Image (tube, one colour):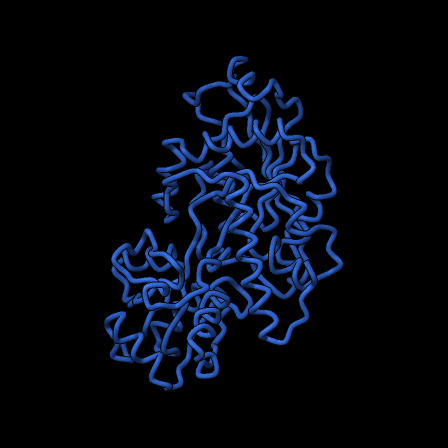
Length: 365
């Protein structure tokens, strides 16, 4: 049975709080797989397999009877929004699916709204670093914490930060970059914001190297503006998401990426060393995750059913093709809920440490 996918836009525009989602900005947004109107997800393709009674019975018999809402806590057209729409496009549910945007407060307005709804599987919430980790660490008035959510699946492989060097520095290899950073010289680093994922990844590495006092940070309003400043020679280095950097490298633009700021290499730059290869420890939490989740008190049979359907979607040929076309690293292995939570807990410790180092008061957890 072909189902109809509806979109509800309930954007609540308020002033952003301290942190923004990791590179979840319009300039880094992917193309929507839906209709030409990015505010409306298209109906599922006619050749998409229908859910049968046998399929439904594969997860202990629970089958949704209410429409399922995918609540995106950012505005329509945002990177997380478009990725969520792609996932919905290739998900096969026996009920209507709705993409609802509730923006504001670095994603906390929408997540708080989702948390206020019943734990019956009718609302799937899209979590990011800002609304799941950063804000609960800094704001003790929120109605939820990380432990109040149960991850179902991540929307794409973890996003990794990279460090690009301006040509004016005369540095062309990772070894030369390492030698410069260890030389004691001062330098400037551009970031999309002083409270986003790329900044936290870079400052974590510099703190591990003991060179954080040598850095002057230059903040730009989003990755596109950072890129223009980088090309204009306004900064010595720039911290970019790997997916963003890969897009410009493939376009033939002059982006001199020399290091992956992580404990592993980027799938977009497999020949590029990572910080761990320099002997730097503590970088395993430097990833950006977009996570589909439900309230932690959702019955397990419901979680199993939703996870099965999302797993089918992320492994579908259409979603993989969309991901590749829009610079999301395709899946190599599915993550379990426990594995995703472990990654989030590691990241939370990293963020808490960075905030404390910056003199900020961190909420106990």
